[in-house]
Image (tube, rainbow, N blue to C red; front, side, top):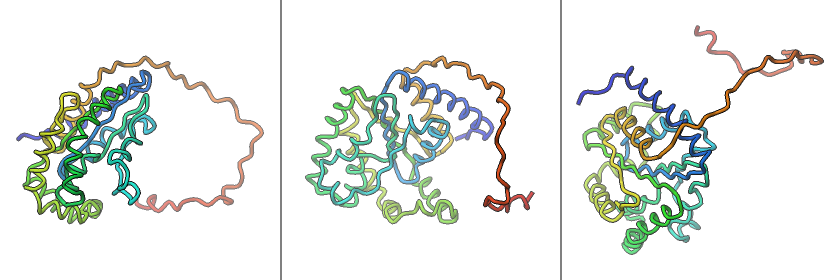
Length: 263
């Protein structure tokens, strides 16, 4: 597959991020509610795509939810309860970096839930999502698909990159051994939860840059946003500052400018 050049990628990403800002303003002004679920294989590129979606947006409008493992108290609650607390209010976009689908994936494969809990999830999840849609939440679900060979290449790269070694958690290493088990779990999950009201959209993520652009373009196509006319901002001349004497600079503690020596 021919890969997009860095120059073309940066130009298209910049264009799409401008559209995302327009989308953000439309959501804010109309009170639209959007919940986006990102799921997929470890090292499939979900985090990188989420980062590109959010980096130009207002974090008060577009928020990322990445919940840790449930506490003992949360384990005793209705399974969906801790996710409900993070659903969008009017004028918000909520991105779930992993979601309630943990039960159909890692919990199922690693034995963190019982067979009955798993079966109940498969029964109740479609109804839960239909309830969200009926309540006026636009629910969008993405599955990032990466080949076995590409996932292994990314795992190997993380071994030598100090900034990415934290991504090699014990759970990631265990999932690496269970490719087939995760494939079966994903197939079963799709068979129950790929519903008309909230279908799964699969993103081919063997090429990260392609995956990011394709996902953002598709996301923009799903929401009927329009550009909101904003009042033109004018920076008036600042009035003269009188009656203020700055304290001596030596009285303040500055961060050492160590990098100025590298210029």
